[in-house]
Length: 292
Image (cartoon, rainbow, N blue to C red; front, side):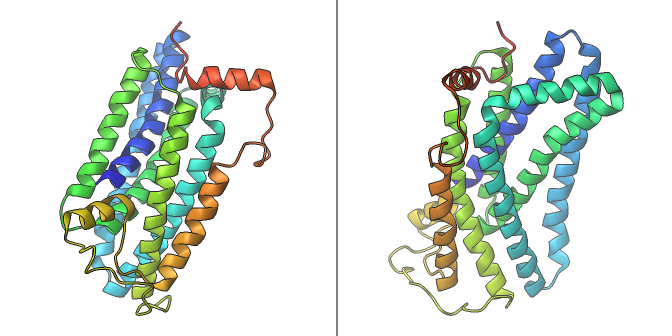
């Protein structure tokens, strides 16, 4: 449940910040007339993301077992790739997100209502589709026959909405750079479990071999139905009897990804002057930047 809560919180907070920045900028510049197209674009984006999630959930139920496993494994890998890209993208651009959105919004204001709807739709829609896909893959991976995973996602989204509202009102200020760094790292760990589960699905669908070649089996030590087994499953998608392929893929993804994620910015090819770094720190502590 915690892993899915983290997904809902992290992904939902990104979308909430985008909405806050768009709305706050229009209010500050006296363009309240443009709020309606923005809300329409946001609503359409949320509706499409919800429809996409429903299509994944209910559409796959009509498939054969092998087809379900093949689809689930393939989409889990795609979800991990998208989330990994998003985590690195947000780490790199979180400090400058406000300025980037303001520029797009200025251009849309000059072009008219349709451009405003499209700007809001694209800004929120990408986050929504990524969230729907990764939530579907994660819930499928951690499904224990209860509503716990879905409740975790819902609680995470509700928390993100509440935090977004507090950001907008100026009540809450946090260092977003640090927040997205540490939640991003935890999300990478969750993604590693989803990836391993996706590989297991492909093995069950007979797209990959080695299903019976277990790396280890500690089911007797950590029973899957125990409270600590359930906790490990919910947080890390832990499996007490993974295959060799699963463990190999998990390690090959997790170690290099975390190493690059925490690498100094100079090693990643991003060099900043002292003045730019100071501006970045100020932006990190002023996520919406509309309160004086």
